[in-house]
Image (cartoon, rainbow, N blue to C red; front, top):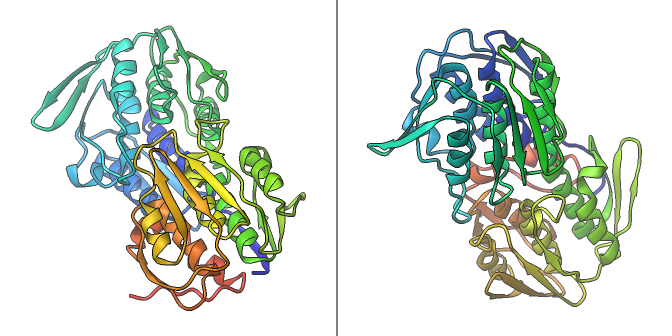
Length: 405
């Protein structure tokens, strides 16, 4: 592959930011907002609550003058797990929300008990009512909250609820992902007072009201990492543009170890792939460790590496569903507990495979790009949840990839 590819705005940043638009009745403008299936679902969630959303290219205009409903439609919430982040801003703005258990990718257990525990510390009362969570908080009060696990969604929900709470909230063992920082910056641009986002202790001083703003969503580090890995696996020279390289440090460190040649430039990251690299061991961790969302793509790359790699998944217990599909393409992989032992092979061959989740789908695309012959990847709705125009972007690099209805 050769050429330049532009990374879109971050899916995992724009979704909670859209939810945070519920905090104000003023108009909010979001720039670099990717047009993804997950974003479309979140827009429908906002519209079901009374919001008005207009898209103009990469720009979204969001206005929620009045919240007309406290209950989100069951079919929307079950489509996407990230939709639970509306709980915090709904409690802040309306004092009540009814929401069903969330859906999303089948990558393992992801309970929302940390979300609920944090909201209860702020004064919310939670009860289960016919399959719905009915959460009421006539008055939110600041509190000191320690998260047993640095959950991204729980940190976001608590942060948004606490932004309107009376007094000061401290979140300890908070998630530190770049998307948390982007959300905090957005809330502060609307008049919030959040300090410490990006560290494990976040301080939030509640304010009474928020105003509109214009905000540019950060680049998607996972999409950027996926293109970097594709370029490394396929060979050629690819410039991945619109990248914050600091967000990719764990990946770049592993590429150094593997012997992949790349260069950080003003425009982004230039990968000079030779299609020849060494096996490296990977262990996923919460940020700033190696991201679980890049585990599947790098595992696919390692199927062609020299030597044996051990990929250990510590974040989700069911995130090796792509392994069986890769083995259908000739990969040599064995699963032992929460680790995958990957023995590099000379080449992969084409096959008909199915995407089981979002990042597994990206891994299969990477494998298909390197494989001999023509592969068919089914269930691509998973891929379209998180990669904007992936087929068009890859064709721009010389790949032969087409969506077939």
